[in-house]
Amino acid sequence: LAKTTQPISMDSYEGQEVNITCSHNNIATNDYITWYQQFPSQGPRFIIQGYKTKVTNEVASLFIPADRKSSTLSLPRVSLSDTAVYYCLVGEIGNTPLVFGKGTRLSVIA
Amino acid sequence: GAVVSQHPSRVICKSGTSVKIECRSLDFQATTMFWYRQFPKQSLMLMATSNEGSKATYEQGVEKDKFLINHASLTLSTLTVTSAHPEDSSFYICSAETGETQYFGPGTRLLVL
Image (cartoon, rainbow over all chains, first blue to last red):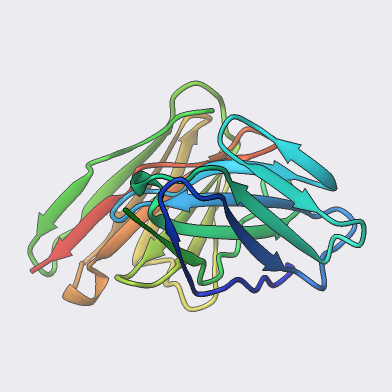
């Protein structure tokens, strides 16, 4: 399973765009990149998943360069309620367990 | 997205007793579910992989006789913490995969007194 590296923490003001980058230098050909959000005392919530290039949904965008050795989660116009821990995970899909790193603790300030 | 539920959401028990936690996939079938444990200020740690109709696969360091897993149907997996001790107090989270994405339950807070 590919190991991931993310910043431990980030701060942002409300209304700003937040970009969280994740490094995964040993990503395998069959690996996908998935981001989850976790609030205290709750299970992780799926945000977005991608394999290459760019993926966008109603919540976020995921940018993946051609070499796939990193990825960037982009959260547009964050609000206080986006304060949470964000996890980047890399692995095959199809009943494969996920290995969680330390995640990035995002604090949104008014 | 798909919905995974857990019951109970929190439980307090006495040391030495057993506690059962249920994990259900509400709108999809899951041949495989996963159980994680999370201590305060730490990340999720995989405990075991629960396979419908077969024995669970445990991660290194997780005692299979202490953490009993039963995956009796395509929508239900249970984790039983046997002879619980205070050090078992933690946040237990399950997940199930739709075939493309893993969805997590809301978690169960266990406190062993």
